[in-house]
Image 1 (cartoon, rainbow, N blue to C red):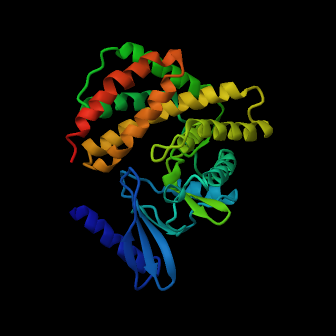
Image 2: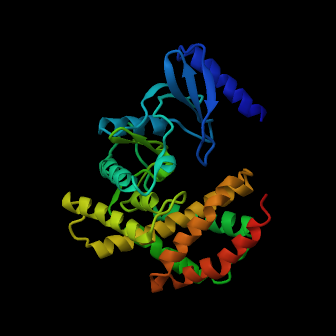
Image 3: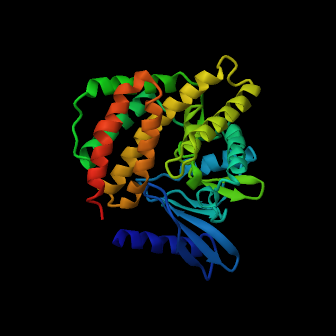
Length: 336
């Protein structure tokens, strides 16, 4: 706690001196599943957002480069007003506090998701980025995420050991190869309702600093099969096909039919949700942040639904249904 307070004092000093902000009030904002912290900065000059990204755990340079690239392409990302890259401080424009997650309902979801998909279409073309090279979302990284899933979700949180590990690895290999076969584009990696802001006629885009070059269906799957909110499966399919038509009309997927795209989309969402489970479990086990466990049931529901559609994922479906879901129910009763 002492280091957290020291960081806050350092941030306040930087805002006063380097950013020339006086009579300021810092209000903590909801953060993400990282070491970064965000504050709304109230001043006589207006409202800003300050990011505290402590080195060496965090690095502000990707955020600065990507924010500039997104804004150059007409997307609404926060503007970096002032930066101290050495100490991990950024002063940003304030895009408000009306997230998609807080605003979405059955009446506006079509409009807001179409707005988000239109922005995604532009964002996926944001490469190369001046002065910064996006890392590739490689097979090796996907396999590392699977290893972390076993370690943090299965072993450390649920206390389980795999009995059919080789068969499950074969299922995961299919996910990896399907992802690798897709066109590789700018990949936000966390494009969901909690990171999108409702603004007049546009969508505000946050939390993009961990972007990769990766599979074209990763971000659509993140948005439409969101761990934090869900919609009827037929709606999800409709939106996914809407995005496929947008890409097809642009000539991006000339040899791919809608069935292939939906297959990519489904298997990509499975890989992402396995990764999400490890993140939620790690936040509980390592950081004692149990709020992320609230999203485990929805994530498992997605995995169960999608894995039931494909015979090649039968082993994964059994893993989720017969092994994981009973264990989660048992362990969850022990979480205060």
